[in-house]
Image (cartoon, rainbow, N blue to C red; front, side, top):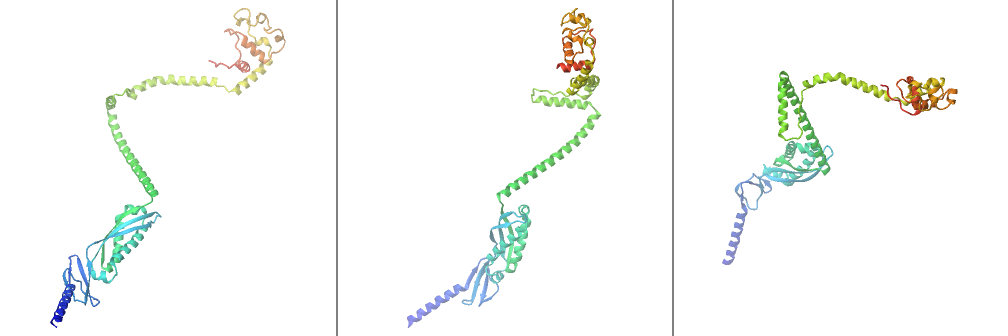
Length: 371
């Protein structure tokens, strides 16, 4: 009997100790306890020691620290139809433990899903340039939208950051080409502005030099000094235009006359073949109606009493070819041959220019230019 009583007391003691241990909770500083007494939510408890009624109260621990939420990579298409892969990170914390437990089943999972859907919807409505250059405004917009959804759950979203944006390789090359073109444009603009400023300064320097021309001579000497420092084999000596103007004025008329004479000579040599043929035909028609003794040179033009053709050409009206050439009118070819065989003489009668041109054209000898 006594043994049974001792055993019962020991069992009761163990149950009491177990119940006392289960009814005492210790909450840390960053924790709060949501207590349910017979299914009804009570006021939040903590931090410190919390006593619960064994078998009646049930407590749920809730951390008030900021939680880092990694948003998985999301495949999006921007407003300008560029595919991209975006990853982000969100920071939130529980500000009302009772709502975080009562209003939503799993506030962490719920916040993650809201962050994913909001990220796709917000970034899908922005251009690629905005996504790359204006992340701060997009982060603020994301934080505001996600916080609006989680506020009824007692969750405060403190920040949302776009961590990485991955775009196709071809788009990366296009963006690099665009950036290079932009840098070239800026360089050209800066260069043009520098030239404009330099031109203004040069105009001011010209005004100063025009007052005292000796300044320009000093500038010439300074330039020569700068050239001589580099040990160049070529020395450039600038000559003022004022020293050349008198020489150019003296040589001006002579150079003009030389140019005019050169143009006249070129015009005489460059006679069109069609004009030469037409002149030859008219001269041949004129020579066809004249006797041979009118075209043959006289005895005064020969170097001796006889011509190169024979004594008959100097003694009488017959030519060196024979009596048949004096009997009737000569052809144009025979006249040209006689003219070629006759020796030149200063006292020979001058042949009219059309006849000479015709004879030269028919004989195949180019006409010399008249002096």
